[in-house]
Amino acid sequence: MDLLNCSTMELSDGVVGRLSLGKALLSLMLSVLAVATTIINSMVITAILVTRKLHQPANYLICSLAVTDLLVAVLVMPISIVYIAEETWVLGSAMCHLWLGVDVTCCTCSILHLAAIAHDRYRAITDAVAYSRKRTSHRAAATVAAMWVLAVLVSLPPLVWRKVPESGVEGGADAVAECLIEHDHVAFTVYSTFGAFYIPLTLILVLYYRIYRAAQMLRNRRSSSRLVQQTVSSVMLAGGGADRDAPLSPDTLSPVEKSFSEPSMDGERIKITPTSRRLISVRRAPGVRERRAALTLGLILGAFVVCWLPFFLKEVIVNTCPSCSTSAVLADFLTWLGYLNSLINPLIYTIFNEDFKKAFQKLLPLCCIQR
Image (cartoon, rainbow, N blue to C red):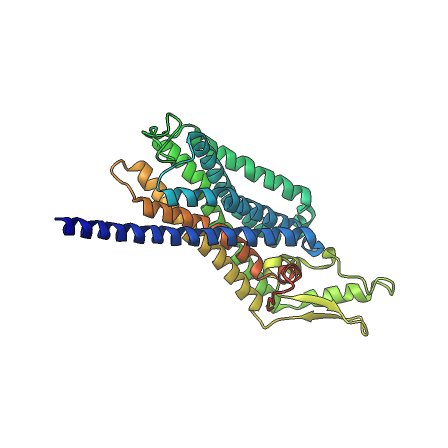
């Protein structure tokens, strides 16, 4: 009997040891993701702040997106790691309310920023001349403020009227064993999920489809005529000797050239040779810009859908089907899959941008970032 008891205790200790090791490795992996998200978003913010060439309204939206994703990495991810490691909520009821509020608001605001960036790029391509006059830093600031207000309006009602879990046995009335959002009424689930994800997703899909179609039309128009280069060249040659070395003004470019001046879709540069004062278009291979634009759009949409769609599908199913439930492991996985979007966003929106690459080279002089 003693031998059997000893064997059982050794087996139990071995299982506990493996579970502890697995939990430690999981916590380490999640911590690495949180640190990487913090570093990359901080680099994007710093690059935009210190690089004058990046001081553009379109980049202000990207900077605000990076700030939102940075808040997710700093305020949301670490507490989630503690929650997963402890397998119960140990920070009290008040901290639970605060953490859920920050979590839902920041993640919703990040998603809304993606829709705002899609709308900004759509207007820049389809209405380049008129929108270039409206595309100011004040308009970008107003857009950012509107995103935060919408995020709070979407997040607040479900948080206020959520079903509060019962207090834990230990720790007094302030202790709760679980920190999550559950609703007794389907209306709150529909309100929160559609406002935070499904409506922005629909808007993003429609806008990026129209951006792709507009890019295709502009490519066809550009391939059938080269009047853009001739027009700009005539303007430069007739401008007089004093201004012939001056850089091209945005108003000098035609709508076709302006529409592809987005940092993330930059594929063509224009320069004046110092000897002949003639306009030379430094062109990549035909279709390179369009392929790059399509790849960028595909990555943006793909990452967004893969990261957030499973989580919001789970939210709708669990909160509308009383008999449906998910395991804690699956719920944590889907939540962190959504958090992963905060790491992917700054990579996608800057990886194809030559100006960002140069700014990163200055921020990281010891690292060699190949162009």
